[in-house]
Amino acid sequence: MRTILAVVLVATIAAPSIGDAQNAGGGVGGAVGGAAVGGVVGGPPGAVIGAGVGAIVGSTLPPQPTVTYEQPVVVGGVLPDSYTYYDVPSENDYSYIILNNHKVIVERRTHKIVRVIE
Image (cartoon, rainbow, N blue to C red; front, side, top):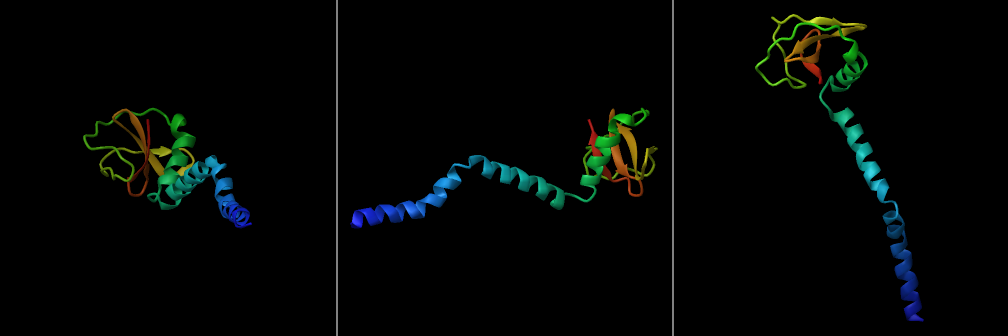
């Protein structure tokens, strides 16, 4: 009788963890979803906006002359005021410039890089 009770007790305690183990994709899906939300919520200001602007207008921006830029071109970097910036169509808050043959979306007011389009 004690053996049967012990088996039932172990099965009752282990059952939830066995069920969770069968949903291996749930852990991965949760991690991926959490990373996506965390990146959006905890990312640098302008990153989400810049990604959206870059995706929408990146291929439609008129070609302009490229500027050779010796510093790393990274999101969050601030470019000099002395450069010539071009308006992003339908986006009052953003401009763009071509640096080292890459389209770069910047905040119009600060010239802070929000998106680099490869």
